[in-house]
Amino acid sequence: MALILFLLFLLVPILELAVILRVGQVIGAWWTLAALVSASVAGAALVKREGRGTWRRFRAALDAGHLPAEEVVDGALLLVGGVLMLTPGFITDIVGLLLAAPPSRRFVNRALRRRVRAAFGLGPPRPPGRPAPADPVEVEVVDVERSDRPPGGDVGGT
Image (cartoon, rainbow, N blue to C red; front, side, top):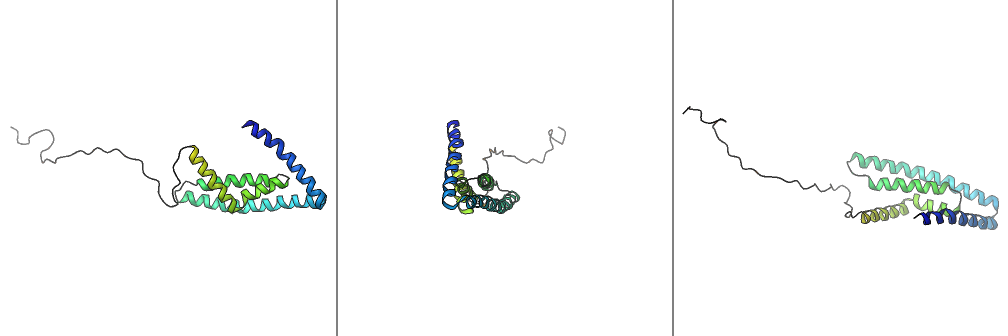
């Protein structure tokens, strides 16, 4: 895992720089800079709008008594997407946009949750609005007879 992270931190900036330089050669330095700044501003606006919607769905799930798993993953994906879009570079902007845009985020969300459930041996997700199955309860049935006699024996005094 450390090797993968090392390679990502090494290769992504090199690739970003290569793409920025190539785009700069094709459209010019100022247009490249304008495209990078525009992508960051548009990404921030998208993340802000989608974040508000995710927060509303999160609160609604809690108010309804549901575990907001989908909303939590959505929030994390938005956070990562926002950071990627604020990072200068076209490759990170594209990946950030994919994580912030609702259709692709929904796809990634489902795939992540399915993978986590499989990794931890959890069952398939419950449909929304369906309560969780109750834990089995052990019950012992006792047969009780009712008697008119008070506790402690006979009343007549024999």
